[in-house]
Amino acid sequence: MDETMRAAVLEGPGKIAVKDVPMPEIGEDDVLIRVVNCGICGSDIHSFKTGMYVEPGQVMGHEFMGHISQVGSQVEGIAVGDRVTGFSASVCGECDACKREQFILCSKLFTGSTGYGLPGAFAEYVKIENAQLGANVHKLPDAIDNVSAAMIEPVSVGVAAAAEANVRPGDRVVVLGVGMIGNACLQAAKAAGASEVIAVDVSPTRLEIARQSGADDVFDARDGDATEWVKQKFGIAPYHYNEGGNADVVFEAAGIALTIRQSLEMVRPGGTICIVGLPEHAAEIDTTKIVHKMPKIVGSLGGDFVPAIAKLASGAIKVKHLMTHSFPLEEAAEAFAVQLRAGEAVKVMITAGEEQATPRAA
Image (cartoon, rainbow, N blue to C red; front, side):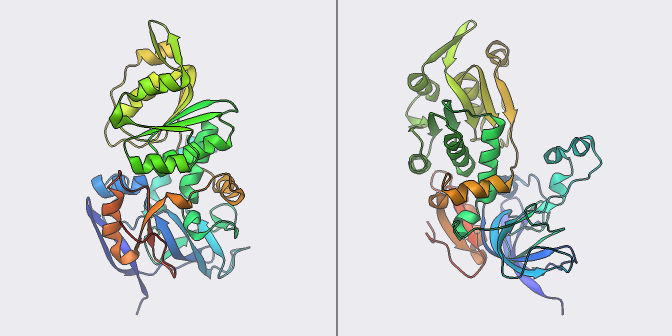
């Protein structure tokens, strides 16, 4: 009889069920990881709510850590029992983006990657194909606890966004939306030398955690005009026919039309807007502000695990306090329901392995 394991399977928008699925079978170039913790990502929420990015039957989950359970005969440098994280990413190798070595832009990236096309880590086990140490499998230093280790992937997103935005020492930075990704951007900007990083959200829980993460000030957007607050904090920057905020860099991590528009108001002329949020609906913007302020507008997707691991191991970025809730795999549906309550939750963790993360639940 074929071996099975327990996994949370997306059956359609708004419906996820834990059931027995076939155990992954590894080849000579693969490894099998026994999952301990896996965080719910914002993109998982989009998939859960709308069916974006995945098809019914998908086992999602790509923010994880665990222990090596099986190692293919051709895999080097990885042994059973190693404490690791990883991510399988499939690119075509033939398109123009791949030829330019801009692999993150390959159109096939999300058709055969962990949690997107390939089975993910909301399961007892996850396979990493063509395992290469330091590339798609990473050993974890003792300095990084198991909860933080399961957030290496989103930390890498924040670190990459700070690099894409070219945050420099002395910069004044605004972060719009301080969920997991916004918080990672906040801390990465501080680590890059920003002199002042301020945060805007509508959740007191998230704003308090942003303070704990090093935000110099926070603003609850339910209490007033966030753009006016940014002007008060960083000063007013006149531009042709108008005036706006004086932020050097604005990270848009909320993924809603309002904050996308606000980013154009808050950034100084010639400043940088880095968009990392994933809106579910198109945003209408006034492009005259782009013409007259001439900001650099960049998108940022994904990141490199290696610098993220280094920053976590050194303590430059700390994320354990971002986990607000934890559920065992069998309660995956409840975990998603809690993550949907954005005002109460930052990172909800699903625990499939031998230890239960804390705090337990709402």
